[in-house]
Amino acid sequence: MKIRVLALLAGLLLPLPLLAETTYTYTGNPYTEVFDPYTTSDYLSITFNLSAPLADNLAGVFITPDSWFITDGIYSDSSADADSLVEFGVMTDGSGTIYDWLVQDEFFSYGGEFISVNDIGTSESVVYDRSVITLTGGTAGGENVNDPGTWTETGETTVTPEPESLVLVGSGLVALAATARRRFLRS
Image 1 (cartoon, rainbow, N blue to C red):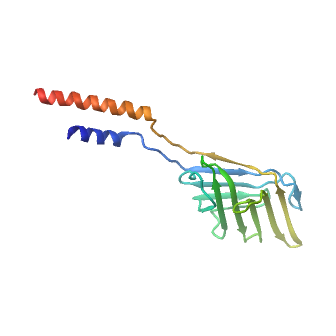
Image 2 (image 1 turned 45 degrees about the vertical axis):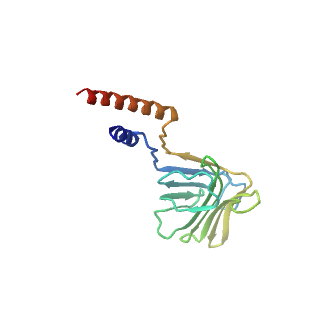
Image 3 (image 1 turned 90 degrees about the horizontal axis):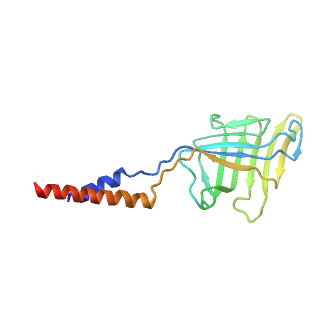
């Protein structure tokens, strides 16, 4: 009975995986086609935070970030703006890295939209970063087609016990329990 209790306590004391807020950042390459006020120095940049890292092997899942920020070099939008309508779709590989994605933001206050798509849900291989704004004199924007930017992930913290560590802890507990039992029987 005491051995079972000790084993249970040891199981509770083993390091559990710890998950911290994870920040995902997309940095697009400079626009290759632009219309004033955009220049070839402008590019799409997206940052969003999740309370835990994205799972492995997600297939076209739409997510709701805790917070997000998007800018195209001219205009910016964020989760702090109550009027924003944003859609985040992701696909991840076996290690939870984003490889296919869609982010669409309509910023109504400017009468335009940020769209960035990496062929999510299609069989095409198109990477498309685009910003479009409606100005008094017409439409302006910038775009970059088939020259993808990169996603980075920061802030993930995981502590997972290794099998060897579990064996060492388990054998130590067995030895401790055996010693405690011998002492109990002697008294």
